[in-house]
Length: 576
Image (spheres, rainbow, N blue to C red):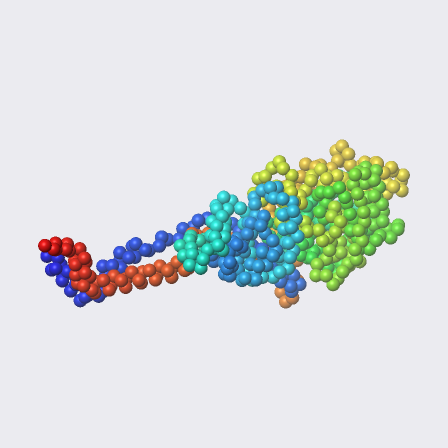
């Protein structure tokens, strides 16, 4: 019976080779077919800055990502998505990933920044400018850590670290069998945003007593800057300056309401856009007022221009000037009044004047007042920072809240932030000094400790805090704030409550020789898919081919195999 079955199967398979595949291949495919790719996690990523300024490119030039995840512990980073945590980040590691032609770099930031050591935050802030000046084609993204992303990082770290202590065969086997993560972004390749308009706002309080009145200009830029535009909240730089300007507008509008306190000074308030891009909004505003019109307060009798920048913290105030003021000028008067108010009312504050000449050979101006200085207008910048090189002026660590999730509370931030008490004190100092200049109080014999802004006229810290909280509730990078943005419309509303002739000013880059170019795709969704490595497909193909080959040989020689098995399994005859 078995011999007959053997002959039937032997003849059937030998005479019909396709039948062999019909019988065996479906079974093989059912057994070895991989499961469809499973999305392990979907999360938002924020791309590093990409812009051109005066023909010079900055930041990353690519946005597309579709590659396997690795950590810095892996031996090979080429065409891999390198995951880094902020606590382990260093510029050397970042450069190593770029040198090895990594497919992308994803830097993971903790939600609660107050938990990070101060030296880690300081180191990263110092590295941000270096990362931007190092132009790269490698996509660089930032992501906020959550449990799923940390799990992906931990699994990838384990996989990357274990390879260093294994033999070559073990590494090959581990690589072929381990689970990996394919990181894929959903967006397209970045492209230049044409006709992007930077918006600035101005408003005024007109003085009384004549036509040729001196004008005092108060300026603050509202945009923020950091290594990633969507993470740039700019609390101290420069939400603090904008909140101070709005509070000064409120206070002096009250004084200008009454005939007895309506001063013989014009007050011009300017909230500029594009401040972090070499003060493009201020540059165009000056061109419009000085070159393209004959009716401007900037053309006649400008007493001085005071720019407000990073005034929300510290126990020191510095007046940054390009040229020391001459004795008897309004600039000199303001300097003396600031010194008097601080020494008599706030002795804990250290005040100094910092002199730095304008260097036109630099790609970037140091402070906003230098834009006015180039046009020969007397100007200076007030800041609690002693130098324009302070890294916190252009950092994503400059946040109002303790966490990127915007829900932290209680603990003071580790990095730069706004102290409302100090911001209120600094606002009071500026308001008192300006009032003493405007009303000529020193020459009238008023004592230095005379306080003008008290009771109903006092500085409202709640208002300052509300403005800072509102401004830092959304990123304000210049690439994200267009003319229809709620930031612009709300600022316009607040200025209109206290000032007259509030108007907008726009600046667009010249199409033939643009001074600035912005790019899109700055915020994307990234998917992490659980996948087997590419070598797994090769190994699977070899196994399938080997299996099919052995099965084919076994079928073709079924009679021989049957005979061998029969002889091996047949009981041996007992010897008598």
